[in-house]
Length: 110
Length: 117
Image (tube, chains in turn blue, yellow):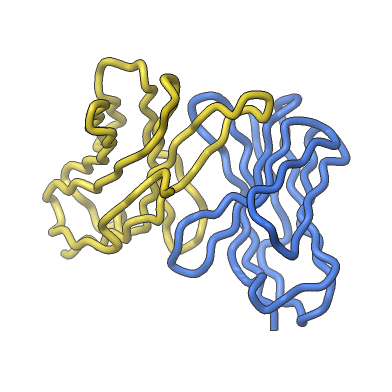
């Protein structure tokens, strides 16, 4: 069966520090992968999506970047975190009629 | 422009009663899909129900049903016999094709449902 793993679950980072969040998918090949961010009490904002290795599309300009080094791996990064990067980050894999989400990473930038 | 609109930021419902959560969408595609997700306080996103644009019958999954009105571009979620465990954020989402970019999933702002005992 297909599963999606995301880590870490929580993270507290100082302003200006780097960030790396990892997402991996099992049980499928060549998945479409997505990174979303959710501010407290708000909806999900699409940050990046990838249809294959090395293929990244950005939905909004920001302090973050994404990479797809392997077929089933999607990484969200930042060189220098800002306070406004705090939020709940979700990785998703989307088969045709539903999307599977990771457990999410709650990032607090202090 | 907003693609998915959920006009109810918060709602209360009495336990055991039915409740309807509103969702309207905007797309020029002929082929698209509509989803509802539940997000409890733990943060996980739980898939509830899916409706394809070509599906003629409204989708149902247990206590959940989707009232799909294509001409009005609405996809309201109906929860029958509300339970205390239904208290959560609910998100409507739409899948659209983006050519070579594949399919995109866009979310509404969510509705917080609170079930009263």
